[in-house]
Every structure is written in structure tokens, then in C-alpha cells.
Length: 247
Ligand SMILES: Nc1ncnc2c1ncn2[C@@H]1O[C@H](COP(=O)(O)OP(=O)(O)OP(=O)(O)O)[C@@H](O)[C@H]1O
Ligand SMILES: [Mg+2]
Image (tube, rainbow, N blue to C red; front, top):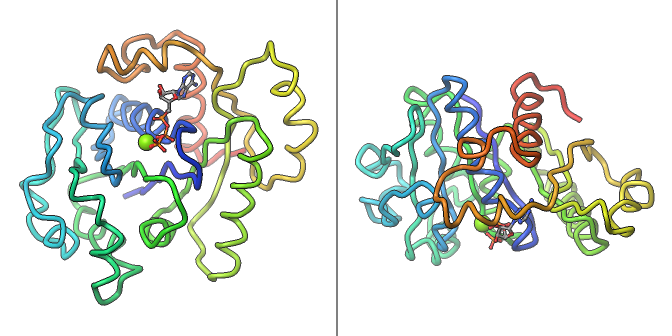
């Protein structure tokens, strides 16, 4: 089983859009796919039209109990969801109270190994205990970067944190999201900062109202508009992840 996390220190950069579309692509390619939402906003449930509340209390889930009932089928083939509810607001506190507080998410994934080929994790923003859990659990951490200085800085903060804490996720890659080629700062970003950023792929997901419209359509963009530019960019991202051909 592959565990791939969409993560960023920063909020609003496209983690959820990425997680939902990559999960949809994995499912489309016949992988038994689980999208695990760790964000109390529960946006994935909205996009996939499932119930927003997990069927088991969070502390039980973190002990690997009640997973069977908590995992929901979606209306898309091969795609299941482990939704987040408002209780996930306290995910950090729950983890903090537990033994092996940095390994719980990895342990839950271990229990899901038989049932799924691919797990995509949608993370909340921030460098929290949740993030440390995800870094330990993921085979690959994918970081969407909006082309801005602060975004680059946040990415470097994350890399520094990984170095300092001695946590080594399988792999970490960044890609640009919300790129508007009409804007000079966006066009210049790669030239000015790209070289300093380790493992920045050359994939760019354009700024597109189709991504925003996903909230209205409540379908992954790669299903509703597969030929669109952003869908093609996500598809290329998936191809490279699948073949481990990044950047
Ligand atoms: N490529 C894009 N083009 C246009 N809008 C986008 C794009 N990617 C994301 N968005 C929009 O930006 C907003 C934030 O995206 P998203 O929810 O995926 O970010 P996030 O990093 O998960 O945010 P949060 O930190 O709140 O969880 C959403 O309204 C989404 O529709
Ligand atoms: Mg999100």
C-alpha cells in the first residue's frame, strides 16, 4: 500500500483539491483507494457527497478500532473515504495524550494495508503533532506551493523541521498550484526561487475557476472535466507519482 499525503504548513494552497483529485485518479486506475481526511473542516466529505461524521469516536479510531464502520463508500468506483468530523479539531490533543503519539497514524494505516492499495491523506495546515504523524506515515509528502515568497519560505520551514527532528518521510516533493501565467511574479517564480527549492517538480496546476467550481459540482475535477488544463496537470502529477518519476 502507498500512502501519499497532501500537506503544507500554509492554509488555502490546494491540499484538499490535490488530495481529492489524486484519490479520484488512483481509483480511476483501478487502485482500491482510501482518502483519509484529517482536517476538521471536512471538505472532502463535501466534494465526495458523503456523510461528514466518522462512525467511531476519534480516540478509538486512533487506536485502530472501529475502522471498518468509519470507512465510507463513495459514489465513485474504488474510492472510499475516512471522513473528518468536528472532533478532528482536537486531533493534536488526542495524539498528545497517547503513548507513541508520533506513530499513531502510521499504526492505523498498517491496519488498512490489506484493504487498500493507495491511501491519500488530506492534512490540515500547520507544523503540528498531526504533521509529524503524517511525515512518519507517508511514503510521499506532496506540497502544493502557490508561487509566492511566503509559500517558498513555508516549504523551507517544513524541510528544516524535518531535518531538525530527524523525521524522514519516504519522499517529499513540491509542485506549483494556482499558477497564473499572465502574472509576471508567477512567471518569474521558478527562475528566481525554484532553483533554491529542493524537489520542486516542473508540474504546474494553473489557476482555474474549474477547481473552484468543484465545490458546486461536488465531483472531482478529473472526473467532471478530464480534458481541462488543471485536470491534465493533476493527471500528469498522478502519472509521475505512480511511476515514481518525479520531478
Ligand atoms: N488551481 C486552482 N485554481 C483555482 N482555485 C484553486 C486552485 N486550487 C485550489 N483552489 C481554490 O482555493 C481554495 C483553497 O483550496 P483548498 O481547499 O484545496 O486548499 P487547502 O490547502 O486544502 O486549504 P486549507 O488549508 O483550508 O485546508 C479553494 O476555494 C479552492 O477551490
Ligand atoms: Mg484543505
